[in-house]
Length: 181
Image (cartoon, rainbow, N blue to C red; front, side):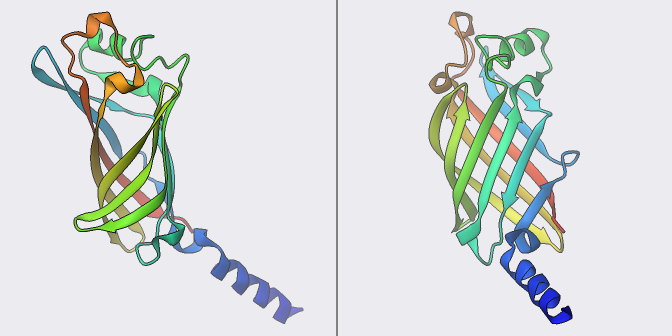
């Protein structure tokens, strides 16, 4: 019986990608920010409620997967008018579209780090996206930095009163995570 239990335990450890490469986001240390222009000047905001399921082992990217979710109602900007527009019906419309999502099952090593090839979904519109990122793993702690730019008009974010808001939005990611046990 002991031999059977040992064989099952070893099989579970070897067969489970969670043992070697699943990561748990440290939401206190991680940030998802965005930057655009309004009236010709740069303005920034952030999302405070984000989560992700990450499976990534740099030595074996064949099982790598990222599914990240941003709760759109958590978008915040320093200016009250910008804030209202961001989470209003012409903005991200959290009541109708509570989440933005990025899913990648194709993570590749690149010259300057990695690239996650996946699909970004905002307000029901999906686009293919390549997310370049760097990754530093120190023991059981990982830190990833990345950014990408999208055209907000592609996702129907903005309305007739948004004429002085830039169409390009840069999303800046700083993700810290601990290896799952």
